[in-house]
Image (cartoon, rainbow, N blue to C red; front, side, top):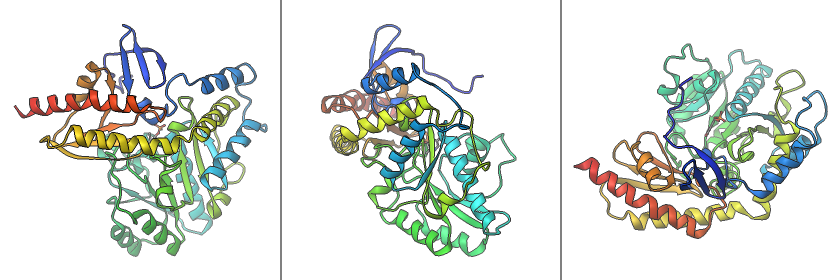
Length: 389
Ligand SMILES: *Cc1c(COP(=O)(O)O)cnc(C)c1O
């Protein structure tokens, strides 16, 4: 079904930050499959884990113990300071688990219609509950009736959260991206996450961070909340966790970790030996190569590079980012840039109409980071001069 409108290019091979198309042309990948291939393409440690496990055991079902899953759970919980985890197969499913967890948490407190505060401009997925939580009308339009039980407030606005709280006694949680992804790489003010933590603590709500895009070293820390040291009650992961094998996770700590019991939730494929083995290999590489710190350094380098290369260019509104989650906001819609960059052998993304978003793999070399600037800055200049004429 034509739900995607792909660019006219197909890749046959990848290595590190590079992809080769069917004509043998090479592209520098500054998208990483939308923040998925954090270790780049065909990483030997990932390939090794995948091939080895494929030769042993792919799947048995969660009706039996799965040692690889238990190991992954333990490693992830330790890294994220969480108590337990539910594995699933995508980001949307991880958020579905978080939403179900919050509702059950509410029902256990005798709240009949437990509701969750969500943000304008957010993105949480394409299933019915997650598109209802998403703060983007385009994603919801045509799929009404939406799932009930969400109150929407502006992002980065603590007063708005307090106001909603005054008038509604059925709220049980706040679901928020620490930095928005699809919403255009909006970075909230320092103190925002802390403020949310405080409101949640005062009222007994769960603070739930959607780190599906920001997690796994993307922003220069393992998890974006670590920049502010604001630990959530629930955190969702997916994208970078499997470097391309489909795996999601919903982690919880404290009271939130005691909500689910056998029968409350499940999934056939979730946490099978194959995906867990690969995710364990991903953690190994991230840890031993300290790619979280590398992501922070590369992010600074790219920000400085773009600020220099695009200094004084009319039409460039803001260059911002944290780690390797970067945005160049222009003053006009710029989808056209996808094709211009592609012609220059560079993969990028445009989101929120006028934001060029860069999510390169964390294994980038300094020279490759510089090459992204070298290829993209002229394309942006060309685009802006043409569009103005
Ligand atoms: C990608 C994304 C999702 C949805 O993940 P899928 O795997 O596409 O279902 C949810 N939240 C955020 C923040 C994302 O970036």
